[in-house]
Image 1: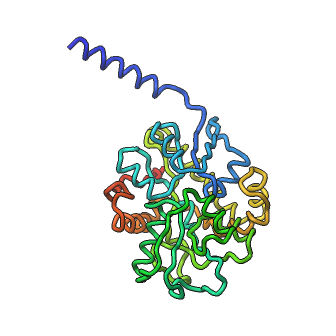
Image 2: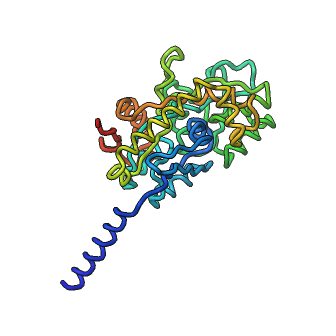
Image 3: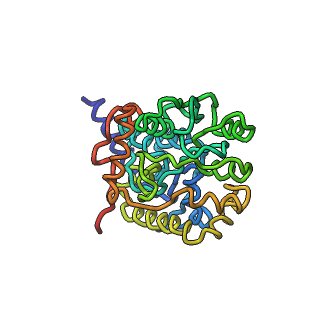
Length: 319
């Protein structure tokens, strides 16, 4: 009993110290590419909120951001929505705060006469990452449209290899995300977008904002003590997202300035294809869940075996 009492006392002291420890930095983990585009105004001029500096931790691979989340080292993070749901179902306690990026996957071809997949006979579509967002959505699309003569191919081990093969005309069709799409089109005029990969076979005249591809997440521990800061960060981030399409030329310059794009010609093309629009997850909950349901139905393990519960989505306090 005495040992147990001492252990409890130590835990109380540790928790008390943790709660009283002053937090002077807000850490946001995000991905190179469209996520960085959405944050560019904040990256260029990092805000100080309630005397707390905002620090950006940028990686090119989602797994690096995921590792930091699992270690509890991030207050906010940007990840593919499917990966975010998977982590939630594995007990990594981050909540979905907003959707900032609405679809950046495109089916490219270097065959000028091809206007639709139905024109093809036996053909392979190359993509990186079996079980990835691109893979599940492509296979879902092919199945729904009875395009059984077209098969996904995972021969290339990275998006860079995939893009290089395209430039060397070793492959004819590939699913690729921004900003690589704009880079390829700029380098090779024979490469064009055959179609955008949507979660459903959505007519092109409908809203483009049906693809909740990317999530902005908040650490649950952060929600317990910093509700007003979450609101302030969210408002700043929304302004940054708005900035990208309200001031595309300035956005393009900043993207080059911070090394995300090689030149403004590429970045100015890429910005609209990133489909950036900040929406609070609580306001688009039905869209988010419908999107995740596609993955859960088609490949249940992609979401961690279950659909996330309602508390996956965080709603800002009304006051």
